Figure 1: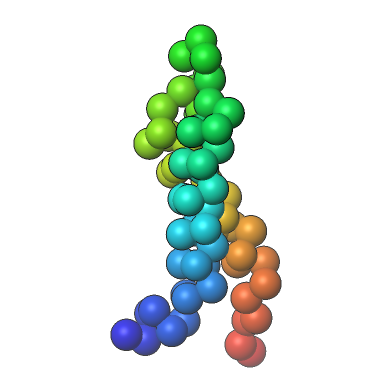
Figure 2: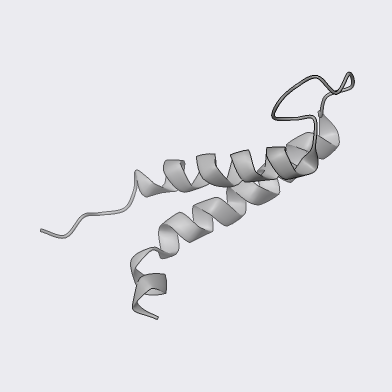
Length: 64
């Protein structure tokens, strides 16, 4: 429970990125299938989750 309270912002960013990555694959995607990230929904969603977690982690305050 302590971990969830500590990293809730990163988890929220990962969830938002996961949804955004899937939506990007669904709407834009890759027609030829040669794109390494957007060729499959799994790759696109995982990449989005990683980037969302990184983006939201910038706004997390560090305790001294």
